[in-house]
Image (cartoon, rainbow, N blue to C red; front, side, top):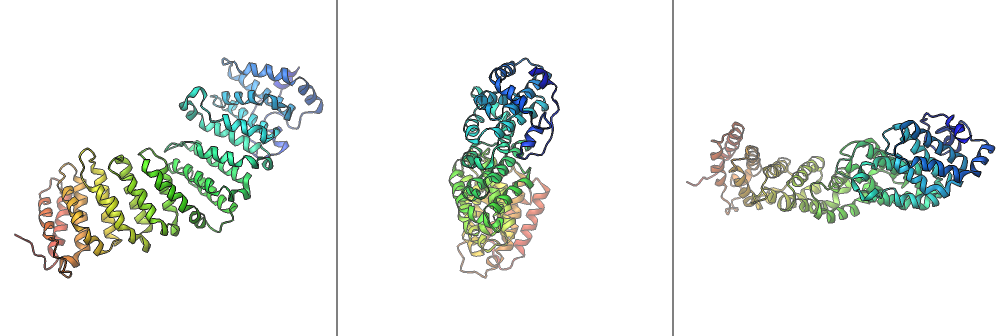
Amino acid sequence: FFFFFFFQAEDGIRDVERSRGLGDVYKRQAFKVRPSEGTRFVIRKNKDSLFQMILDELSTWSLNLEIRLRLLIQLYNYILCCEDAIASHMKTIFRVLLKYVDDDSKEVQHVVLNIAYAVAFFLSPDVVFPYFLENLFVPEGGSEGMLRQSLKTRLQILNELVRGANKEKLAPHIRTLINVLASLELESSESANIVEQLLCLVELIMDSAKEQCKEYRSRLFSTILNVAASSGGVCQPAIDHNLEKLRTYCNLESSQQLYSLELPAQLKSLADESKGWNKTSTRRFAFKLLVLNAGEAIEDYWELVVAVLENCTQQAKDFELKCDVIMFLENVIDVYGETPKLEEFTEKMLVKVLIPCCVWKAGKYHSNVRRTSINCICKIVNKNLIARAVLYNHYQGLMSVLKSCLEDEWAADLRLASCALLKALIAFLSDHLTGIFLKHVDIDYSDIYPLLLSRLDDSQDAVRLEAFAALSAFLATSKVKIKE
């Protein structure tokens, strides 16, 4: 009788509005209305034997699609009839969810998610969440690889649990939910589906927490930042939406105010973490997003920014990380080039980051790092973001690395960038070159002449042309005495 009754139920999966309501939980799968009192009484009376029978069937691996789907729909219907009486079978139901959530059939996956919603709807969050959160992200058989493959679908289960739960009773579990999200190790380029599920879950948590978001603001902000860092640029509207919602729930006037409040702690944490970063570290993307979106709030924290940049460009670091960080520095110059305080820190950027990255080092040599650093220095000079007196103080160190770069016969792009920088330096230091600052007699600017002269015979046309332009600018300045 029971099998016949439930097999006659509608098999199709409905796409219903995802909101918590008694009508919705019944419409999701089979029933148009709540099952009758008589049906619920009979099912409840025999629930243990019925659940045991169907769960035993679902534990068989050789079921074909039609039988899998029918058994899962039947399980869902039993849950609707038993309601909170399913508590004693919750752990077994959880194992069924994990087994079938990654099924090849989308229909099966949808039924599994509807079961998760129903479990959370009928049971207290105090019963559901401690067990589910403890076990949902535990690798089966110790396989981290399998957990990584099923991360999207497990997040979907958690989303349905949060959707179905009573929001008032969920409040004590908000902290645990946020901690679970924060503990997930995200890769540098997560799929759009995983990012979408993560952002959806963050939004559900904030909607459940509401005013509690003030208490968890830093953890939520950091979580959104980490998700954004792992997204590779996808789902940006959803990321902005979540940040705006966090700002609203925290009663802040603008996103600028949110960044201002979070920036000090976030940057201090990142400055410490950056000592251990490598080319696969996702937190560096969080750092980039934080700095580039901070606006005026960044003005008082350039010291911490430089500290992170310095940590990421140490000699032992991967060349990919160094290149990425220096290109990011170029973006920073483009975004904040007009701000007065940036000029105060360009000397530190030059001395601690850029000049060291231009130096040839045995066993650590990579022309891309040197070229990117030369280009960044050139941008600083061209945008007048460093005082002439400051640049003059570091002229000898800069010329030393430039000479090495210009003599690198294996990297034409590096020689080209070096000629461009020399041309920019000649224009920038023209006052010194023309002898206005005659007290600076300790520097012999004539070193520039033989360097450029040697490049007029370069194997690459582009390098010869750039060297000629630099040499012309040099000779055009007056009062330059070239030693024989």
